[in-house]
Length: 368
Image (cartoon, rainbow, N blue to C red; front, side, top):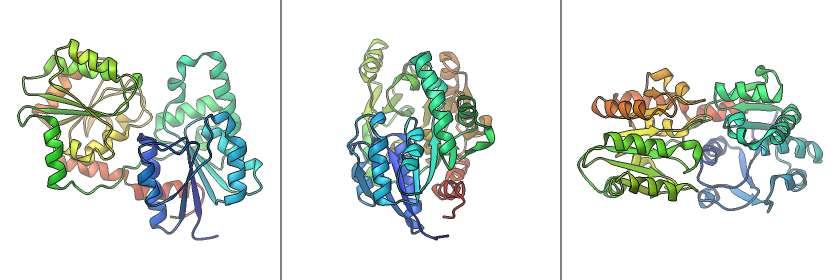
């Protein structure tokens, strides 16, 4: 067995999302162990492109739709001859094994899903649901290894694909190791809060329906003091609606739309509380990022991930999904009696990139 491998990581692009950050964290660990890493993108765009190119080869296939990906990806595998192909996010997870089979090079394929697909695509209708199930049943069988980021996701994938639950390995998402920020960056983040008084509440994530930021705005409105602030880090299609809601609630001066931040660490570190108000998650990377900064967490007990990360409430507060009163009460209580920061940081260490990278390769019978 070769000790060092060429590992290709397939993604739609390198936007600043959780899956993309996870792949960069894994790539760093693979590279440190001496493996060669390439990012294979359908389209070469996204906020994290520059960061990836600093360390890794980035190859664009110039494919705008997943259904057109099979042939270009198969040609890439034939030419580049990677030892391992990592594919994340359906439908890439069912296309990658097929492309590998059609290529003239044998490589191992590991597919990973980061969300509960039955919930994510629930509104797409019966035809889409049938296509989802059939493609998963066929594509997953051709893969060498199948990874889910939480127990809930693994259960969901087994149900949808018809494969045995034993065919899915749970590997929790890694969170990149970050050095605590310099005083300059901390001072900059403090300035963005706009006040040295009151409590600071932060959330991080795309402005889309899944994240239910509207619920968080309502809960914050119920408890916000004159100098309290809520910061939303991210961007997305619902930003206009959320800004309008903040104005309607009289929160225009208390809610800060800070945009996408390549490294949100100093914002976590200067916050008094992190809140996740999602209706559903695959895992909840941002919860671990907050724990790593020693920032207390309140999260909806949504399927799936938050309860696994917070150990059913041991390392943070869980509240029912879509319950404004429960969320507001938990936020207020957590700000008054926060958990010990060192305890939270120790829990975050359980989600190290080293551990995840080792587990990914172990799923293929390889070593880091």
